[in-house]
Image 1 (cartoon, each protein chain N blue to C red):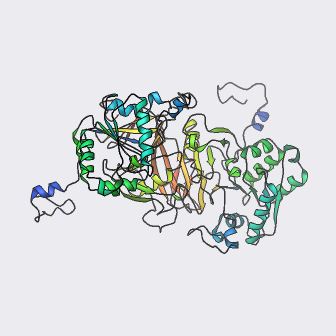
Image 2: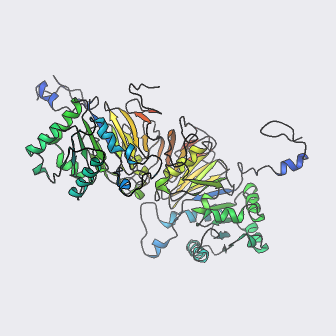
Length: 318
Length: 318
């Protein structure tokens, strides 16, 4: 008979099979890949203007979008771009069609779902069942969770992610922040040191025990991610810079890609923290956050909480 | 005979007394106090508008300026406000006269030195020799170092700070950043993750082995202070929030005051860092920064590198 996790009482109202059926999906050992991007990934627009390099790394040829294509079989890959988070879905969709087009991809689709009523459209379900990658655009992450939460659409994506090698889910900005089970949806950076100023809710649950933030340095978001981590140090904070991403395999091995930084905040060694004791609006005190700056090529293992200069294919703890 | 610190050779060209005379001043065990403030300290302007509380702590009655007054003998204290860093010195000076006036202080002076030619004015030297506290206003920290570096004016302040209990040097924003021997003078927050984007020079040397940054959360400066610390992890980074300060006694014991946060960055445990190996303009990788968030009342011991929930008078390592 199934047991309650909290009190060890046997759950008598449900047969064992049903209790198992409602247990959360095991994304920890997923066969697919996640790519969380901090927003403003290079779309080759500098290339159009004849500006090849913004800095030594930030050129389109080595960019994040090319990595999505490479990870999913090359230019013949089928990618579905989901623009639901954005308030300008058609413009956003066209930008991606154009950007992927520059890498030679001709099989890119856009899905402009605007509300829950449209989610279970059979055409869309068929398309997300048959593509190689899905890319969630930026916008408002609450639109993603409130529209896709509990839908067949999300179930199909989760199932494919758990079971299929070579299937990739990318998300940029809001699309990245919605990936985790704990999601920041609001938080003014300049007031993020005050308790209660960082608003958190439940994300899409593609990955557990992390909290993802985007546009990280550009918008000065260290304080808000630190507050989120202080609330629950079991989560690892992933602060994604712009044009920068973390490619996550097996729900655990992360590799930084792109032209900027990924900042990791590990709160497991926090000693003192006042967050449970102070009223909202007061400054948060935290002793002992561990922080890593990851550039392109650096790795991080989530479960082991280990920074790696280089993420090897068969990464093990040093 | 004096010895060279680096090679242990005896220095034969100089008599012992001269060699001692050129050694750096010992600010490590200073008897005076330093108060480094992150800028925008509450000057009671909300009080004028009838707005008492911006948040639970940020009201003038418990503010930073009052602490300066309390630490130096109460409302009869003589404070000299030095406006050299600012490009609007008279306006800044008047603001402080007004703010200290609200706490009942009537003996506040302003020193509007604009260039090196004015620094050795005997009246000013006399005034800084006889006041209880000095307050460096905000503005441009390079104006402070380039105008006061190597002057009798600075020598008098340093001597008083080293030798006199009850003498206090406060500095806000640029005035705080100029206090350490290593001083950030420029660094765009949004590019601070790239090597070479944070510009550092020598400060006034009131305190060694720290790097002070101001307006810390408001301007998203975590990356720039981290870069400065990665360059030389022997320094402790002190990121001061607005209306927030660190009161430093014995050149070592720090107490957070004010309504915001002080963020400490300790780089002593850094393992991997690529800063010496990459060209300018490339992202910096750092493994293992230790970070503390200090609110009002929390303490930090610089030499021992220990966070304390409460800074006790006779603080010892826990």
